[in-house]
Length: 90
Image (tube, rainbow, N blue to C red):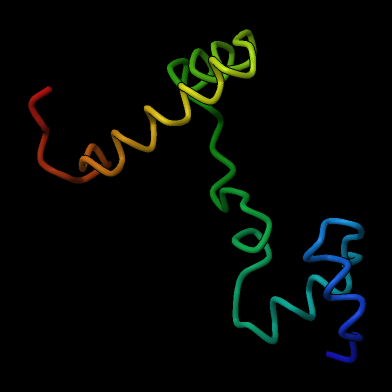
Protein backbone atom coordinates (compact mmCIF):
# COMPACT_ATOMS: atom_id res chain seq x y z
CA UNK A 1 0.00 0.00 0.00
CA UNK A 2 3.01 2.26 -0.29
CA UNK A 3 3.89 2.52 3.41
CA UNK A 4 7.46 2.35 4.64
CA UNK A 5 8.66 -0.32 7.02
CA UNK A 6 9.59 2.46 9.44
CA UNK A 7 5.98 3.69 9.48
CA UNK A 8 4.65 0.19 10.19
CA UNK A 9 7.23 -0.26 12.93
CA UNK A 10 6.12 3.03 14.47
CA UNK A 11 2.50 1.79 14.50
CA UNK A 12 3.53 -1.54 16.02
CA UNK A 13 5.47 0.20 18.78
CA UNK A 14 2.55 2.50 19.54
CA UNK A 15 4.52 5.62 18.68
CA UNK A 16 2.20 6.61 15.86
CA UNK A 17 -1.06 5.55 14.20
CA UNK A 18 -2.07 5.39 10.56
CA UNK A 19 -4.45 8.04 9.25
CA UNK A 20 -7.98 7.09 8.23
CA UNK A 21 -7.18 6.85 4.52
CA UNK A 22 -4.30 4.47 5.26
CA UNK A 23 -6.56 2.40 7.52
CA UNK A 24 -9.01 1.98 4.65
CA UNK A 25 -6.18 0.88 2.36
CA UNK A 26 -5.00 -1.66 4.96
CA UNK A 27 -8.55 -2.98 5.33
CA UNK A 28 -8.89 -3.36 1.58
CA UNK A 29 -5.52 -5.12 1.26
CA UNK A 30 -6.35 -7.53 4.10
CA UNK A 31 -10.00 -7.99 3.09
CA UNK A 32 -11.09 -6.88 6.56
CA UNK A 33 -13.95 -4.53 7.39
CA UNK A 34 -13.13 -1.14 8.88
CA UNK A 35 -15.26 -1.79 11.97
CA UNK A 36 -13.57 -5.15 12.51
CA UNK A 37 -10.13 -3.55 12.12
CA UNK A 38 -11.00 -0.95 14.78
CA UNK A 39 -12.75 -3.39 17.11
CA UNK A 40 -16.13 -1.68 16.75
CA UNK A 41 -19.41 -3.58 16.76
CA UNK A 42 -20.79 -3.28 13.24
CA UNK A 43 -24.39 -3.43 14.44
CA UNK A 44 -23.99 -0.30 16.62
CA UNK A 45 -26.55 -1.69 19.04
CA UNK A 46 -26.92 0.16 22.33
CA UNK A 47 -25.53 -1.46 25.46
CA UNK A 48 -27.90 -3.40 27.67
CA UNK A 49 -28.36 -2.50 31.34
CA UNK A 50 -26.17 -5.46 32.32
CA UNK A 51 -23.41 -4.32 29.95
CA UNK A 52 -23.59 -0.78 31.34
CA UNK A 53 -23.46 -2.13 34.91
CA UNK A 54 -20.39 -4.20 34.07
CA UNK A 55 -18.63 -1.21 32.49
CA UNK A 56 -19.51 1.04 35.41
CA UNK A 57 -18.23 -1.57 37.86
CA UNK A 58 -14.98 -1.83 35.89
CA UNK A 59 -14.57 1.97 35.94
CA UNK A 60 -14.84 2.26 39.73
CA UNK A 61 -12.31 -0.51 40.44
CA UNK A 62 -8.64 0.21 41.05
CA UNK A 63 -6.01 -1.18 38.68
CA UNK A 64 -5.70 -4.47 40.58
CA UNK A 65 -9.48 -4.92 40.65
CA UNK A 66 -9.75 -4.20 36.93
CA UNK A 67 -7.08 -6.80 36.21
CA UNK A 68 -8.89 -9.40 38.35
CA UNK A 69 -12.20 -8.67 36.60
CA UNK A 70 -10.58 -9.13 33.20
CA UNK A 71 -8.92 -12.36 34.36
CA UNK A 72 -12.27 -13.74 35.55
CA UNK A 73 -13.94 -12.78 32.26
CA UNK A 74 -11.24 -14.62 30.30
CA UNK A 75 -11.61 -17.65 32.61
CA UNK A 76 -15.37 -17.75 31.96
CA UNK A 77 -14.82 -17.46 28.23
CA UNK A 78 -12.20 -20.20 28.27
CA UNK A 79 -14.49 -22.46 30.33
CA UNK A 80 -17.06 -22.18 27.55
CA UNK A 81 -19.51 -19.64 28.97
CA UNK A 82 -20.07 -18.08 25.56
CA UNK A 83 -23.19 -17.06 23.70
CA UNK A 84 -24.78 -19.98 21.89
CA UNK A 85 -23.13 -22.68 24.02
CA UNK A 86 -25.02 -25.02 26.29
CA UNK A 87 -25.46 -23.49 29.76
CA UNK A 88 -22.68 -24.51 32.14
CA UNK A 89 -22.88 -25.52 35.78
CA UNK A 90 -20.83 -23.30 38.12
